[in-house]
Length: 333
Image 1: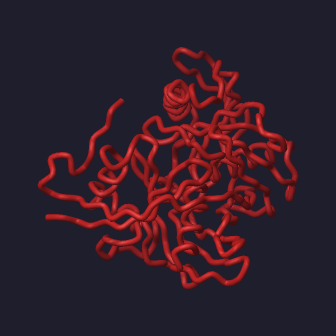
Image 2: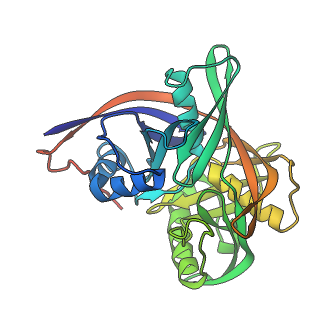
Image 3: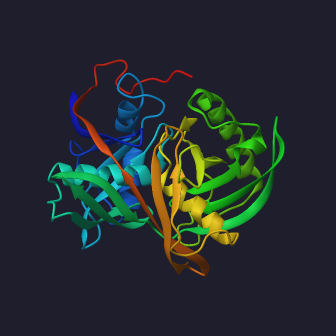
């Protein structure tokens, strides 16, 4: 049996998003989280096929568009990477925004097209800016973000004791200065960043208990963020994010920028409305700010906004053949 999966490919400051726009059966579930669980339990072979070699690679990232579950949303989205599924993705949100407007799935309405998208972590409010007849960048109002704690200690084999800030920006992040781990944020150091990031994540999750106040299934750090002084004029910091099974985010990171801003705010180092420019390992820039204070259950929270560019790179029709011995792909480490 052959399954045809149409996708639109984008990159956001160098980080890919493979957006599935069709080919899936009707997905049961009244929430995007329920649809995500259904895909994970019944259709995970599709994720593996699209992410792994020979169709993908270790750093590939994906999105599956679904029917909306909220009255005002244009669609839903499920995020996936080389290890499984995520509750949020900022670079992917930017890429999906460009995809929806550039392909006409969401009709453009002048220089700024606004709409909402359902995600596993909540409703995302997108504004896609057009210039010269082209969609250029997406701003999105993220779900509420909050700090778990600042300068939390964890003992990491081979590193000793480190201190991290933990914040939720759509995913849970452990944030630390790269120098604390003896690292440099450079493209030629990506493998080492990934290796150390995996060790830090394992140690933090074993030693620091966390749980989202309204989504209790989110109870572990998914992403490790390394921060260093910027190299681009105007940037506040340079960072990269280790996610999945040792993948390195090429972009400045959308949920990552949300988490870093939230950690800075918790330390009194960032004000509501103050703009932050974040630099990614590939040299791209995102703009971010905290729009307002809010609450998440009984926990104080903030609402981040992130802006960045994305570009369509390809339109694919993937063929998944059940007779293919490598239909679910493979991984090289």
